[in-house]
Image 1 (tube, rainbow, N blue to C red):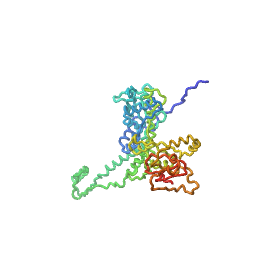
Image 2 (image 1 turned 90 degrees about the vertical axis):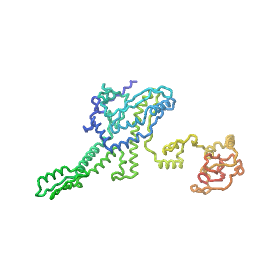
Image 3 (image 1 turned 45 degrees about the vertical axis):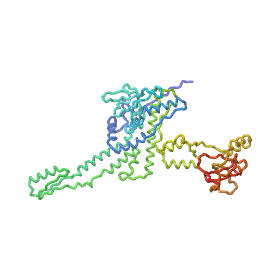
Image 4 (image 1 turned 45 degrees about the horizontal axis):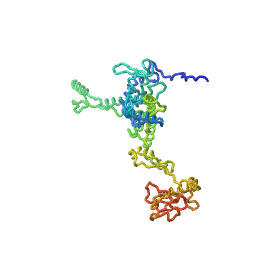
Length: 514
């Protein structure tokens, strides 16, 4: 058999990297290198709409619930999972670390250095991740080390540089294409709108500055003295908008403000509002602009737009978790255990369940017997409603218990066996004085056949009577009774034989069927 050849990559991604510097992907010179970093800083720090949009995108990612999941069922798998839980909950401040990671959205990438240390975990010395140290995007000079090996070169505050190898780095990239570790900023496609909006603001400021005070107009009389003309000129030049500003007008002079025709100038407000909406739309958070500046929109439209944002945020959060699993979780586990199935750091659903939708779905599915509620289901509902957990001593046993009356096939199988029948009778023979049980006609297949009864329109029978002694009315009736229920829903219920030829009622049936 021929030896298997090692897979060979015939070409490269096509990203231009010169001496560790990524170039060539951006067509606007002012959005390359350090100039890009300065522009992004100006956009996110100096524009209220950009800031609000970024917060609307990032906060659901930060607020989501993250947790560790075991990779297998063995004891060592559970220990590995507990170590990851301990590392992120006790050693690291996960929420504080997480606030820096979404900066990859505005800058296109986020870089952190991994710092490991020894800690005592449940009496055992373990190597844990003690710090995920954020490295500011504006300080990254190269995407290789000085010797050309994988890593980065970071500029220090004293002007010197330091190389950090790839195995000590956690790099998150937004919309990475090939080997472009710088990614694409979420704000890049909104740059044009931000640029025009910025200039419109400047135009509006100049307009208010020039139009607010106006220009003084002086009309001299024919016989005006030169000294009066000079005084009028000087007064007009010194006009300021303050509480004591005035001009003493000599006789015959006409000094007033010109009509600047401000209403005839273009108002940039509509253009500014348009570019604001485009900036928000670029980040999929346009719903936060509904109702502002005269804009319209319905509650349903807002919900639909939020769903798109939630899907986007879910994908970003899962990308962060996947990179954590690849670079962080594997490193921690490999230094402490020998396992084949690694635990996973996972993110819960970011989208919040609608209480109304959830309750309707559960009610319909349960009624149609397509869903059997469990304790886990109740725990989920309590979580959605922000209710406290169910106390352990109050947990309900929701195990489905099948009776032989409900399982006709099983009853037929044992009917011919005298020993099985005797065992069945002995097991169900109990003292019967007052019976609190319930039974539905739906439990007896074929009960109404040949009787001309509309089974879709069944009512119920109530007998205002004392509890009946069934054994006096039915031969061997004590053995034929269906066991009473323990749910306590009725003070009085129904009793019936196991075979559907006699049914005695002395209360309201749970389903009101007979």
